[in-house]
Image (cartoon, rainbow, N blue to C red; front, top):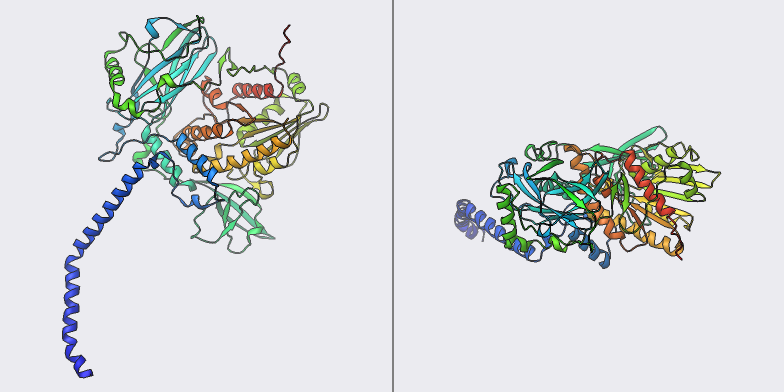
Length: 601
């Protein structure tokens, strides 16, 4: 038997060797076939992906999607709606890498004021349209949208200003629409905050680098202490995690487990720092102050109009350009291109004549004037503030932008004495009391993520839990501001946090209908390259849109910090200057103590 097997051994060896040689000689062919098959699969997958319009929704592809409680079908539907609402046009794919010369250049770009209908004068109640055309650094017109623009109409002589609503036509043209609200001169301003190419970088960072701001916690037991990295989501395969997910809300938070100490020895929370080198040198050119970051676009002709008193019925329709003779010739041809470009116009789902302006108010004589029929009172004396807040408990929750309101009130009202709780001034919790007039003012920061200096673990509270602990009532005021510290995270994480707060507010309103709830919106801030990557106005604008939508229809009032800072002539700042804060506080106090309407006979 063994002799017969040994006889066939050379044959087996020959066949094995031949097979190995065949594979070695044809391995490239097999690899090419495999690559072609994979490529075809992804092409097919891409077509299916596009046909289902999934690209319109924001998707987070990091491990952050797997943290927190699974949303209900209703919550998932709302989330999809919100993500579609804030979807942003992406630059088209280029055959080669995009260079700075191909990106939006505010110096070469132009805007023009479209003439009034039938060449008539402008009147209060009309709507002004400004047409913007973007060009690249080579002076060539851009054929796609996605630039982040801001618009403002103002009159320095009158102390008047209003925000414009920007409509992206997705073909390189934009419309900025303004309501005309005062008699006299009105000057248009258009600013490029970020090019469409810069926005694409910001969106990628939000989707893929939620860790670009990191946090840390100290663990201590006796004389032994350890510090580890913490975040809302951490890769679980690096090392064991300590799970600090909130039991009531399900809000997740994790720290890497210390090597020696246990998870229950954590004593504080702090901002760890910012990751560097997140973008390439070419991408860094998209965030140059004075070049393509918050730079004004020039007008091709006059940038001012004269507004006459209201005449007849209030008119809010779009005013079509009927005569452009006074414009520069090159811009005339561009406008004709814009008006005749039917293919691109069909791609734009929103047209200026269908826009209902969402203007919450405007400045006149340097004073904010709401447009919703509400009258804002002026609280110029501390005694007026005291009378308004008498027998009131004001609970402020959120980030440093609402803490700024707390600081303003205790600085403006001598009767409010801050009670020393021996907490850091920039962290809190903070409390001030006027025992004579029975006023209690409190501030507490929201739960993580919070980029403050050291906060004791025992003081980390989620807003929804704090709201569930309030009795509420007609003498209770709740003020919320939560947005800035969520700019580096996927939007669905912010949606989840607001959902928990909204549920807690509904419970509060149900048990105490007289409770006054005021929400402070996001605001603009000064930007450079580094700040843009973590706290860009584009991030803030996206979060602000989500916040307004999620609380619409609920019995809450909004202080529109976004339009108040954009319309004002003072420079943008994360913590707005005192004149703007004063307007915000006046708005808050007007909600607390609305102007009494005179009885009519």
